[in-house]
Image (cartoon, rainbow, N blue to C red):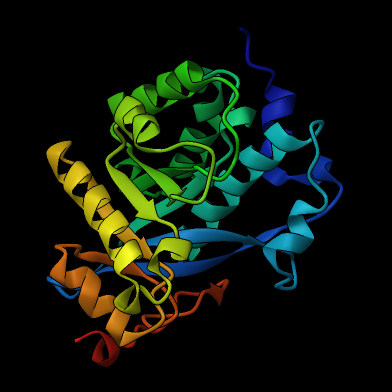
Length: 251
């Protein structure tokens, strides 16, 4: 398919959306190495309005353009803030029609803003119903072949299970906060998460525990062998900036 240069320009500046958007960032840390593994880009309104404000404006007619604009904004802000870690960008699987075409805007943005391609992670949320799993697998394969890391976000909160994970085999899987909350006092959640972690280990997939809010949650998950964490205990998302990490809270 011939790429439409005007369409790409619209995706780049986002004007065709009818509203502006920006980004907040939340770190993912490696507690074993005590380093920042990456930052997840979280969509916000132009004045810091929450993701809900943004998603109310998304429909089938602007879904693709929204997806592309988010990628550009995330890379633009990461470069502006001097981000040296990986940058994790969420993408909407039902908005990516052709990975070869859709990635061009991303590549152009990385080049324009001098952001290294090998620092990009693409997250697909498991909470959005995937209408065509083979197509998504094609997208994931294409991204990995081009050197990008891939992740499943919100795992355990959506429409699929371990079969979904086995079929896609991303580099990372982010455990939904619904599984993490109060896991220290829930033997059921501990059993579920332990089985997922063991499954990931067999497939050489790195688990990430997101939504960490207490030291007790962190300790239980560390004992299970998880090393990568994200959540309010570590740092809250920061609008158009990189937040300070409370390393003392995650000893």
